[in-house]
Amino acid sequence: MEETTKLATATKTKAKKEEKLEFKAGDFVVYPTHGVGKVTGIEKQTIAGHDLKLIVVTFDNDRMTLRVPMDKMETSGLRRLSTRKVMDTALTTLKGRARVKRTMWSRRAQEYEAKINSGDPVSIAEVVRDLHRNVGQPDQSFSERQIYEAALERLASEFAAVDGTDNEKATEKLEQVLTAA
Image (cartoon, rainbow, N blue to C red):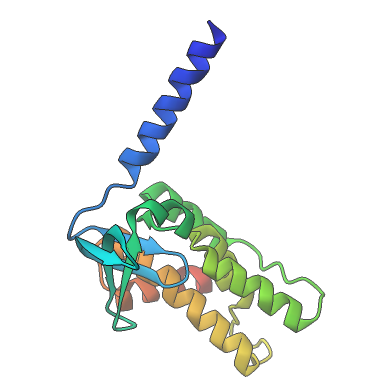
């Protein structure tokens, strides 16, 4: 009896994953290393003798089009936009106290890049929070500023898509949350 329960649970989990990762033209999605993009369609192509079903995603900020094979969606990290609840958690993270480790900058920079490329809004919010400088604090180095801006842009683009606003308004709102903290 336990085996049938496990099998049923596994089947439900698999069905949920398959259902969860179905996209159609017009859907906003997040690709971890590029941020928020829009699905423009699904196409079939023959590549190296293999027939592939591809999801076509465009990223307007980068002026880039990405084609992700359907069977590689999960491993590539392609996902739906975050829920309002996840974005609220990210905003709460922004309000928190900055946690800067006392390690070498190169090590911290690698960790920050990994968090940004993870595509997780809460991790990206941690980077923004930790690298945000208020008036009266020492200036950032060029690389700190670049990482901060990349994280802020990535978080703002997903926040804007979830909130239904544009990137500028989303960035302003995130900066207001940071300065209020």
